[in-house]
Amino acid sequence: MDREYGIDILRIVCTIGVIILHTFSVYYLDPSIIWGGVRGNLVVNYNIAAMLEIVFMCSVNVFGVITGYLYTGREKHSSFSLIKLLVAFVLYSVLVTICIMKIYTDAIHGKGEIIRNLFPFGTRLWYITAYIFVFFMIPYMNRFIKAIDKKNYLRFLIILVILLSVLSVVGDFFGLYMGYSCFWLIVCYFLGGYIKIYKIELKRKISLLLFFGSCFVLFLLNVSMQFLNSNFIYKLYGKILAYTSPLIVINSISIFLFFKTINVCNQKIRKILKICSTSAYAVYIIHAHGLILDNVLYPLMPTRLNNNPFEFLGFGLLVVVVVFLFGIFIDIIRLKIEQLIKIDSFYKRISGKIDSLLLWGYEDK
Image 1 (cartoon, rainbow, N blue to C red):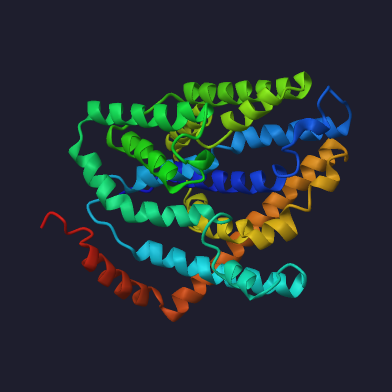
Image 2 (cartoon, rainbow, N blue to C red):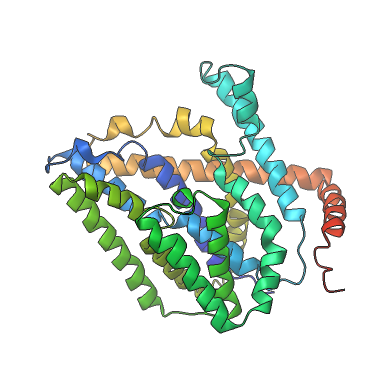
């Protein structure tokens, strides 16, 4: 199967997008500091950060759509990639915990907290936990997709979007927690699967029009929230900016369809894209670990809200680039070490036993 390098570019962009969300989007969520139209660097920097959040809020959904697009239609399913991911997950969690304990001596209190940071399955690195569940569901979701016709598949998606996305603006009736849920990733998987199976395409201009049109609506709502001093709009904005929001779903699909059409011919660029795309999950694990967020990333931006806007934006983006490149560098070293000790053969033996036990790839024999 020919590699689609536009998808690699998108995975890299979304990884950077998640870092941007974590770098810019934590300490300005309460707009009460600028209600009433207060001017100055504070309000400018707030709106810079708000715009970045709006643009990149679809990043997590896109990861789910990419998973559905790449895995749907595969005749065989192997646990090999999941084993490699889990090993990297535990390894980086251990390294992060040790480093933070050495540098920030008051960051961790008690053995229980140490264990929670060594194995941070759950809320802080929620995506990895949710992805594990989705991964085990993939063979069965693919059989469902294979068995259903196009018309019923579309009806199925419409029902999912109405119940789990449109109605989420009113309330979280189905316990999706604004999209921080394995069940929401499954919805994204089915969206990606539909695009893959039925070769859904959209002209680039239309994709961009949908994406930036949705962003414009969200930004207008944010500005209205600031100047009208309305708690109702504030709460509405929180729901309409969630992963489950219809506007964020539109952004996720439109930007995916845009990048899917991109082709890369230069072999050197292809090699770089493949390396960075392969290490995307590692970058996420390293930078989104609770100890890194609380002690390194989150403290960086709040004290700079009153800075010159160019300094505020420039410093924040510099942090994002450094975090991304550092994560890639560390993961390249890990992959080289794994290659040297030939540990993949061990992973393959384990995955072979798991695959045989679960009958992955052998259901129809």
